[in-house]
Length: 85
Image (tube, rainbow, N blue to C red):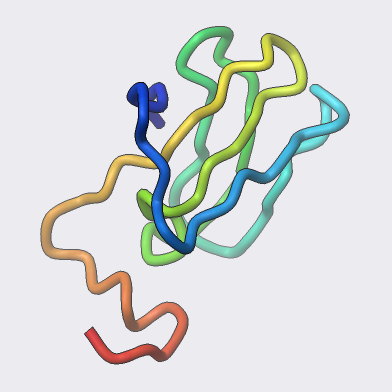
């Protein structure tokens, strides 16, 4: 995860809001957990990297920081939602 840059607004992205600091916003069956860059609060657990891209932002319930997942080179993000590249 990383901080949102000033003026960074993806055209079709959204911000998920974590309401309870003890409960992650997303859970899946992948290899990676995602934590807040400011307070290390768990935001998403066991998520595949294909679902965590730059269009998804998560607001931390503990410190109100908006976090963005870092895209990993070589991961086919279009395959997660079955959209053409």
